[in-house]
Image (cartoon, rainbow, N blue to C red):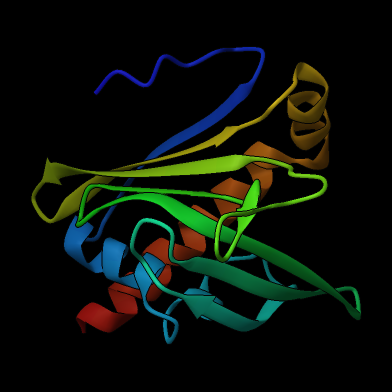
Length: 158
């Protein structure tokens, strides 16, 4: 899959997770699962609304250090068990957001033996936004989310 990555605009994390891609995809697309892994602990998701189809809602509200942070967006592409693309560049009904931050691309590839090659890409509109996201700890934060996702999915398998 050619994503035409731009090192100035795109931040990339790839891991092999010990869980099947179908389960990981389910965790990413069902409201009952997302709060269990989507933000690094001790922060937490306190609300989410997911409608995983092109143009469908991807809304989350986090609690970070006692403050609520709302993130509203939409899915741009959904390929079952393979790919999710969502952005805060638009909100429900294709309304442009006033200050978009990024577009996320999450890929799930079968790695054999019930494992998944999991890739998370944060694509930004400018090098400055990408640099700011990197400085915020993209790799550490999204890496923690990948670890939490793997542990949560493994708990569902038992």
